[in-house]
Length: 282
Image (spheres, helix red, strand yellow):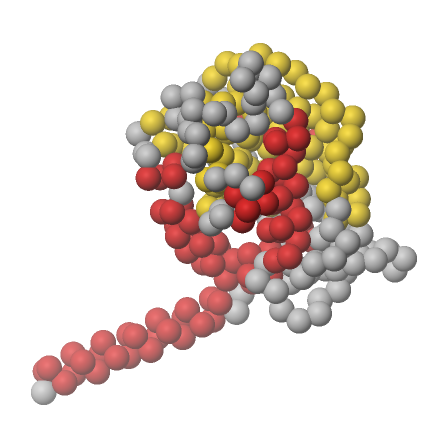
């Protein structure tokens, strides 16, 4: 009898947990946290950074004590798409975060074209040439930066990862101009970074929902453009900043980046989050 009662209690507990989980998944912000946490751990496990005990830690929005960025920095390990795009055997891991949700039942301000976090991201890239590990990706034999290779990383990320996940498969744009390059920059505990400030024209994420796309699991449901004359995924000019350095001891090129329509948002993210990145060996 006691055994039967124990089994009955366990069954009730399982049912209660399933109900609680189902209710949590109906709340957009909670669903996003759950999905991105699982997604992050799977991709982190597959990354060469984890396999070689390399720490690449970028603070998340919860560290600023402000309602600005999402409270997780998510990992994505590219499974060959970037290699195919570059026609080169490359291993790439992407770390990223975006604007936080406006409420538990709302959506990310990433979709709000009246927010400074509209279409905004920050994070990092880690790239290694697997065929020739001692050949720095993005640099020539004299250690000079190859701008086209570095630019190919965010271009591929935006046009072939981010936008398709939102349902944008046509008229994808990624153009850069007005590059300002500073060399020998001290940053994140290391010397000899190269800082690149640019203007970037790419598609904004505001669009009318038509079906369901996997990107909604992390960003929430989309918002339509605030102006009736603006089309879905309308190209906009953004500001971009990137710090690039080849870590010879790890044979990996690291890029730290932030993109936003608002310069103050770029500067704040740079100072409060990106600059506090940790890159080391366990």
